[in-house]
Length: 356
Image (cartoon, rainbow, N blue to C red; front, side, top):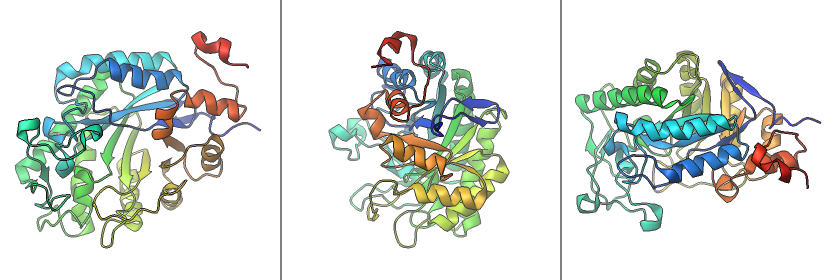
């Protein structure tokens, strides 16, 4: 029986050789937003390792939009060159280079995980954070600055400018980060958005900022290239953003021309209650796909080849995204193909190891 995980997928004019995606994962290893050889090896090795799509980590559209001082950025033209080098290598491995554009909002200005992950102040290279409302992620943190109209317009403009640079850098998929408690998610959820203007209150108002960002990105992103949106399907907290609203937003995004919803969850509030377990987020991807007819990506504690195969083969999602499992094994695609008895092309340099 042929493997569905290793079947190709056409989105717009782009053909993905298989359904394995390397999830965007922060490396906290950039200086002033610039990519370096760590990013080349990290992303490149997963392309040579057989994945069909490699999505670069959450890449900030402005310095203040970074999660940490070590995040990648695409807020100035000089940052394009190294990304071009990385993307050329990914393409040479018959893989697709993607980018996730992001703004961290109130969760910005944090230390790297191995430095404790806490908020850093200006003496440690940190900065003031912004958000829809003056509500901090942790009670003991400095309150973020609520975005005024000019601030909102700046973020929209930053996404537009970064998208233009992403095209120049050679990315072939763009994902807008609307999940994990970062700025777009902060506007979506009533737990973090207490605004009383046209960007707060009703569902229509809370999604307005997201739709503005999508429109700005689309004004620069080529129509023939895939556009993804990452969503947190639920806040896992009472009174927060939920699956019903996620389905509703996904329907609207489909009408607006977004091609795929990358379905994650959580990250907005520190009091979230997540029932972790294998496939724990897959039902969200399945629901959104079923309710909207839209392509979805599944993510979260998916670690086995047979597990990923079942998700795609049963129609729960169209792509499967791997994060920590791909950190454990850069050659995930090659390994899973062997386990599922899918005959795939290996890098010529590795071919002599293909058949044991």
